[in-house]
Amino acid sequence: MAIYIFALYMLTSAMKGSSMYAAGLGTFSAGVEALLAVPQFYRNCVKRSTEGLTIVLVLLWAVGDTAKIIYNAMNEEPIQLVVGAVFQLLVDILILIQFVFYGNVKPPRSKEQ
Image 1 (cartoon, rainbow, N blue to C red):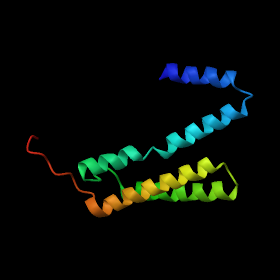
Image 2 (cartoon, helix red, strand yellow):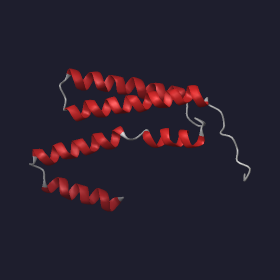
Image 3 (cartoon, one colour):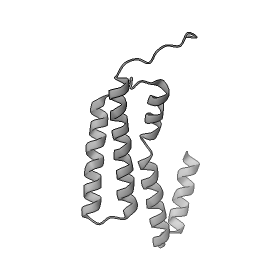
Image 4 (cartoon, rainbow, N blue to C red):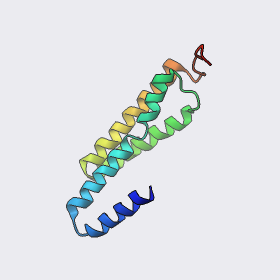
């Protein structure tokens, strides 16, 4: 991880004056942030459970993502920030739907356990 951070620092230092690099880095950052809840959604699907996840946390994610959409749209931020926030909100909604379908119960144990 330290090598990655150092390499990114060196690249950013070298490209300091490039608006194209800054836009690319911003888009990459927004894309990574937009994908943060996807592994949780996938895990819930595989386990058929939302065990270990509180609905309050997901509701707060949704509130924050809604505020992010409004802020980005009102301030005419780059479209990739708006699209990323909309994607995040959609994943939040899908996880909330998982609470309805799966509840917050322990997943069924397999016979091997």
